[in-house]
Amino acid sequence: MTVLVFGGNGQVGRELLRALAPLGRVVATTRSGTLPDGSACEVADFDRPGSLAALLDHVQPSVVVNAAAYTAVDRAEQEPEAAFRANAEAPGAIARWCAAHGVPLVHYSTDYVFDGQGNAPYREDAPTAPLGVYGSSKRDGEEAVRAAGGRHLIFRTAWVYAAHGSNFLRTMLRVGAERDQLRVVADQIGTPTPAALIADVTAQALRHPGGLSGTWHLTASGQTSWHGFAEAIFAEALATGVLAKAPAVEAIPSSEYPTPAKRPAWSVLDNRRLQQDFGIALPSWQDGLERVMAEIAAG
Ligand SMILES: NC(=O)c1ccc[n+]([C@@H]2O[C@H](COP(=O)([O-])OP(=O)(O)OC[C@H]3O[C@@H](n4cnc5c(N)ncnc54)[C@H](OP(=O)(O)O)[C@@H]3O)[C@@H](O)[C@H]2O)c1
Image 1: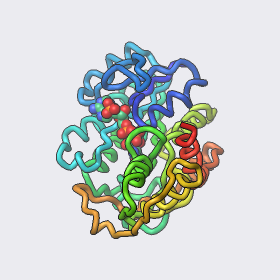
Image 2 (image 1 turned 60 degrees about the horizontal axis):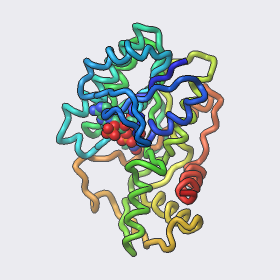
Image 3 (image 1 turned 120 degrees about the horizontal axis):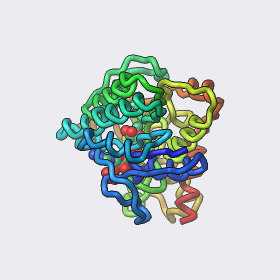
Image 4 (image 1 turned 45 degrees about the vertical axis):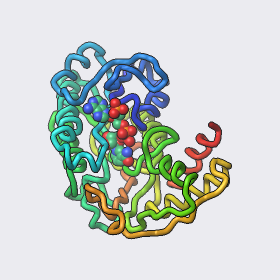
């Protein structure tokens, strides 16, 4: 089996290269043709969706996993064309190639397809109503993947972090080491989800014999605010020796931390369908944090 992973240097992409290795030959792509360890890989540029079919023809994958995306939520407000190209046009081109060749496609989407006005975990069939360009482009990407008509597994995830890459946990550890006091938003509620969990579940789903196609919510279990997550990060960092001292974390409303893109206030996704359909248990977000912090502590 040849598995083609788009975005091999992103948070989820890096974990996929590890998690999918037991399935067969894994071929990675990045924009530069180089992986974080310096080794060479295939080049895929989502700014040129028309170029992707030739790459797919060349690799002849038996499974495609798309972890590449334009993820700069605030910058997307100024660069909508780039966001829609990478998040909607490129996945559409990949999905059409996959459908034409009978190749299953795994694609990731986001809690930002919802407007965050709910107060119960969003089910997969809840109406989408993105608040900004990033969420709209990801919603269009989902629709393009479905419209292609092939077998697809769309996993909507949220609040992704890892021991590597650009994410909230790494930002907290960096600024927490420099400052005695931080102010963190407490009125956005969601579920911090390790990239490793997303990759491991993807591998399990691909091993599942059912040949299922559809959309599932793939997050850790439970919920917290960014403020709650920050406090848990610092408690765990102290417990594992990653930080010698922790800052005081003040809870603030989103109105005191304005950003170019509006974020959904309520981002909790109901992940029960994935657990039922694939027989997978999704651990708590606290469990995920412990694992990622242990990885950071181990160096
Ligand atoms: N991060 C989150 O909190 C979050 C939340 C919900 C859903 N998701 C979804 O989960 C998936 C994985 O996200 P992630 O956190 O792993 O993202 P990430 O760490 O930001 O990685 C994004 C990847 O996409 C690549 N990429 C961006 N623009 C590209 C382009 N024009 N052409 C080719 N490659 C391009 C990046 O390559 P470069 O390194 O070259 O830029 C990188 O490999 C995405 O579908 C994302 O929308 C993420």
